[in-house]
Image 1 (spheres, helix red, strand yellow):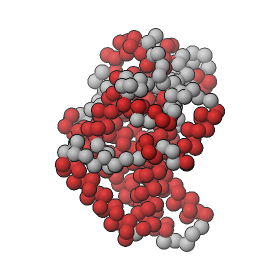
Image 2 (image 1 turned 90 degrees about the vertical axis):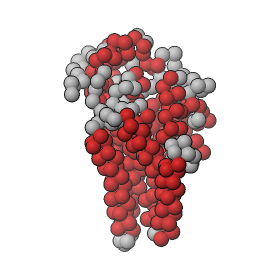
Image 3 (image 1 turned 135 degrees about the vertical axis):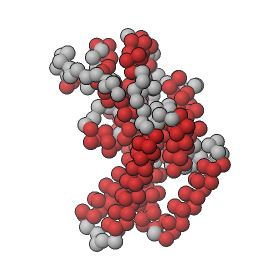
Image 4 (image 1 turned 180 degrees about the vertical axis):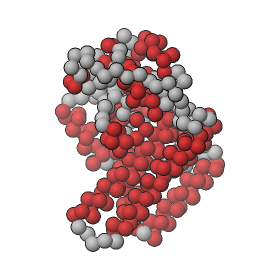
Amino acid sequence: MSAKILREKYVRRFVGLKKYERQTAWLIVFGYLLQIVISAAMGSYLLALSASPLTVFAIVALIVFIGTRMRGLNNIVHECSHSTFSVLRSDNVLIGKICASLLFGSFSVYRDVHLSHHSHVGDYEHDLDLQNIKGLGIHDPLTRRVLLRHLITPFLGRHLPYYLGFNMSTRDGYQFLVLKTVLLLGVSFFTALYPMTGALFVIVPLVFVYSALNFWADCMDHAGIVPADDELDSSRNVLAPRFVRWLLFPRNDCFHLVHHLFPHVPARHLATTHAALVEDMHYRSRPNAVRRAKIPGDQLEKATVPAE
């Protein structure tokens, strides 16, 4: 069964799943920002304490955590590019531009590149998303050596030329260029006043942790399976416990195959959509869709998408 047939079979079932009301959408964005600010404040406090293995571990944990919250903001940009975050289309655009600016990116550029990825996944000539990182060999068949290469690439900084870039264009409007300029000056001034706090809890999470998480996410989403003849086989889900999803896969982005099959489904419903698709033998037969090793025969937990 091809992705096209699977879509035709289930698309009506997944139509109309609720997006966030505008107040909730803005509160979620504020929540991510608050987590970043509180974590940076906690890190600043820890820096003032006497060094110990515990404080060093806590500081490293906060650096990584801040990077995951930045990725959460990026995933909101992704949802907004599909207009699946807020019920109001205008809010999707505004929230997308604000969150992209906070990460020194451009929502308009991101949306154009990402939508080409959905239209031509794995086609390097037209998939601008994967085309931009072609040099990292995401398409290489997965062997132990390739897996090890993907694992250590961020530690060697090889991914930085592909993932690190500040978009200071006016594609989103002059007001967002001003926002990014003010933010860049603010970060520079803050780091000059508080060098360790600024470096460890702003620059390192943004430059190294956030970019590394983006690279590893792309590997988990597509490594070794693009280009594939069928879109059903060109992306994968990464099934993980709820806490791991909250920490490392904010906004349910671990259900990447589900997202490619049904990009109109809001991220909040991807888990239940996956559970519903598992009922289909063609979907659950794909190793990139489910962890078949833990599924005894056909004894699968039945789940449906709730009607909200």
